[in-house]
Image (cartoon, rainbow, N blue to C red):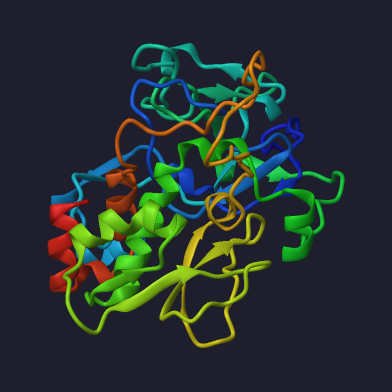
Length: 333
């Protein structure tokens, strides 16, 4: 639990810490987004956030690297790091600072800095964001809040428990182009610029076309496949593995393949696709029987990982400074 540093008032009942959501790497423009985090959970963003902003001419390469940026940028936040993220519904006892409630068209986008204040002491304590094209989230200002005694955090679940309870499946997976773009960046870096041969199936459907466009073809290709809890370790050079949703730690293979991190919800969708009832190849439904199990929907166009999430992820990896990868970064996916 967190409270106001000025007067100690309770600000949120969220008690369970989770890893930083990968979906922050991008948004869907002019779309009303759901809350970024599940109710009762919070995450801590180590990156600086909010004003003041510094133009790239005012920031040295070393300062940018200390803030986790290794590729060119227009402006960089010089705000405080370690803001606490939570779902708007978990916020308690605050008022909106109306003069800081600017937005695009359907809500507040946080452009004016902290827009939430504690009614007891009037201290600005956080920023609410809920405009279209933005994940709904509240960012508590780290120096304006304190930890309060409260219920214990949810115990860490092991991989077997995560699979058994269905904790790897959540509704944000409908924005799967965002974690796919982040995973694509991780695969490209892990490839070292060599060709990548993608195992047939869900992984090829998700990343095959994009990898074919970004990396060269030819001999000596590295094989990419899926590995993880309940799936095992196939013979491959690179394996997509899930990131623990609570700790942010990757599942580690034992067979020597290079692990490539992937959002756990997207990984679970690839590893355990939903069952689809199939009709016989010949014959059909009996006369007078109406179909009540529609065929699975097919997209109107091939799946494309998020280009913004791809570049967002690369820009935060030191390897982007290598000439071959910088060329890919500048070209985009």
